[in-house]
Image (cartoon, rainbow, N blue to C red; front, side, top):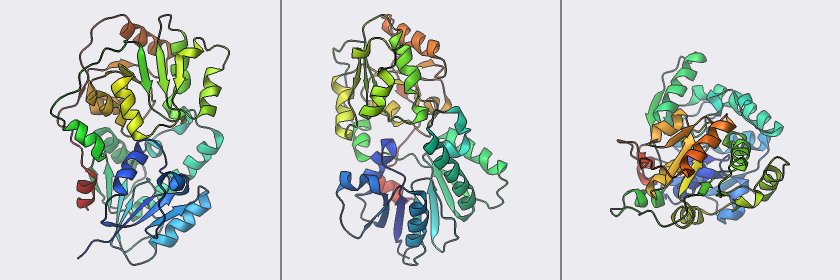
Length: 348
């Protein structure tokens, strides 16, 4: 029987999820995409294969189900963590790219609107998960968290759970490169944190920690201008000129920053379902300072770890790195293997 595939991704518009979605848009086997309206101008896609859904919750709920209740397909991939609320005849694959559903989100610095939206999505997730056939996650830690969650909600239906770490072809080509990148002669005090301004990304603690550093440094960020100004113009923030905002970079420019401007990735995120910058930094032979969290230990070894909820711990790690001490080279954990977009679809 021929597989006819719909991919739903109406929440995905930034970060690693957007990178992976962009790669899947090139797969001809997918008949239809349900996409977030915020990426319409960015992608310039204008044929009936692409349905754009507005940001409003009711639009998402209604238009999503309007498109999937049609009986002209065999497989639905929920690439945005949100399964159908209604039972479908098609096979439903839920690809989980967020930790929100398994965490107490009050621990993170989300704004009020985001807090409400996530609570609504948690309810949606809990209702819809019974209509799923398979759940795909990317790391062992996410698998453990999912199993714990399923026990907590006492889901009686048996679900197939698979570890399916997905990469775009650009990163795969870098990972398969025979000649490794050499460390170039950059100053050791150039740091990079490629992340949007979501509450769990922990920018405020990071910037306060860097403002306490007495040695020269540069910290490159990828925030929108409004978020950047809000963070660095606070009275207690010193060395404002050392914080450099690159705004929302393209994938190619992000990779170029690794290669030409920085010697270290600093990644203070409080929680992640994956953390693709950690892999990118390893590929480009960069040092890594990262939160002492399970998501980082799933992917890499030999990093400099700190407590992301403690400003002093972040500062100590930065000082330690700038002291001139030699550290072991960060490596991708042995046995970790990505799937290409084509292999990802072929697993259906």
